[in-house]
Amino acid sequence: MANNIIIFDTTLRDGEQSPGASLDINEKVQIARQLALLQVNVIEAGFPVSSQGDFESVKRIAQDVRGVSVAGLARAVEKDIDSAARALEKAEKPRIHIFLATSEIHRKYKLLKAKEEIIHLAVKAVKYARKYVDDIEFSPEDASRTELDFLVQVVEAVIDAGAKTVNIPDTVGYAVPDHYASLIRGLKEHVKNIHKAIISVHCHNDLGLAVANSLAAVKAGAQQVECTINGIGERAGNAALEEIVMALKTRQDFYHCSTRIVTKELIATSKLVSTLTGLRVQRNKAIVGENAFAHQSGVHQDGVLKERTTYEIIKPEDVGHLKTRLVLGKLSGRHALKERIKELGYELSEEEFERAFKEFKHIADKKKEVFDEDIEAIIGIEKMEVPAIFQLEGLSISCGPNTVPTAGVRLKLQDGSTVDNATIGDGPIDALFKAIDLSTGIPGKLQDYNIQAVTSGKDAMGEVYVNIDVNGKSIAGRAVSTDIIEASAKAYLHAINKAAANNPKYTIHP
Ligand code: KIV
Ligand code: ZN
Image 1 (cartoon, protein in one colour):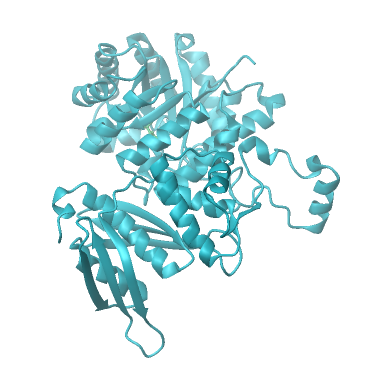
Image 2 (image 1 turned 180 degrees about the vertical axis):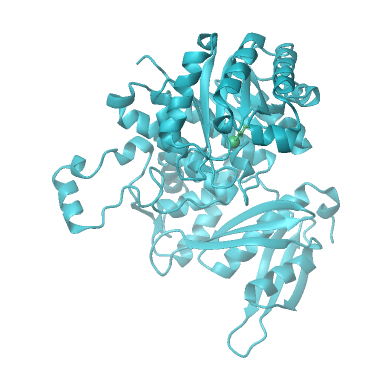
């Protein structure tokens, strides 16, 4: 179908700006590979000048990921553009994305610059970036609150300077669908050279309208949509990729547009992003939420059984929903687990598989039925590629009414020696994490702790997410176990091991 919409994914840049999200370089590369499988057109991999970590991850993604454009963000200043260009050197299709605020509020209070100066800086930056690459995108930040006549001047000037894409951000989520659509129509009508560039839209969800605004803009003629997996992003987030894509696909009759997204990869991508960022997806979230295809009322169940389309507008398989089924038990062997992992669409190295098998046996011993979700939870952990600098060897907890919560832990270090510590705390988890801190010598400040059951049933595995602050850096950890205290200890150690892996001093006995 003509009229293909370009999907620009900014999960790794705007998405990573979500409060509570933090991804290390390996995790970012893993997500980028999955985005390439999903076949997004552009991956915005980061903001290279903002930190060494961001620079390195954009560089790794640029050299490892093929078949997509890789974009790096830059302010309209030479040092940012130089840094983005260096990070993107090995990209198959590099794009430099330059932004500069244009609204009166930003000009007056943030930039302290007049309109003429803004145009001058924008044009200069685009021309400078053209030295490095052809594919330049320009974003007039806070475009939706910018005077239309001034926005027209800026957009026309940056297209003349060589911008191939002009993005119209609704930076603070202020737009409403009719207003945003008329803004896009206004630009198409008044910008003389608009036919030489792609019009892109980038919506934030402060009023819960990011997806509606993006779709209204597409109807008005926008050709690129910027979005994130699960709608994560700054404050209330960005437009959710899965919702945009499935709205365009389901309502092709209305939009007459298509994307190249492999929709069967949507659930896998959503799960990966949620697992690695620690940002849970709400149960009733459209398309990828657990309840998105669950029918509770008798009337609905009856209708769906008679004819699926009575109450379902999307086939669950089309977005990659698997029917939960009972798979394996404690008598299942390597072969059965390997086959099931393959059916679930995962690829593990031999080493990862051996670790997953060991964990599977451990769980199957405690749990009668091992479901697909349990296996996926195990795989999620194995794929995290974190060196086991500190391993949990044993733990004991004492707590209850009229008892001082006490925890004891034994950790195994890389040289095979063990370290034991016990301490008290405000509660069992507090005591446990304090005992781990004493043993590792790495004090972590707990910022977030989250626990949930992987499947239903009293013997369900508990999945624990933690977010800790180590020396001012926020690090996520995750683990699963049928024993939630053990899962808590392992999730905490998972985050600590990430911190230790980046600091050679910690690989030595504390
Ligand atoms: O929201 C915004 O304005 C942005 C720009 C950098 C495109 O994220
Ligand atoms: Zn944004």
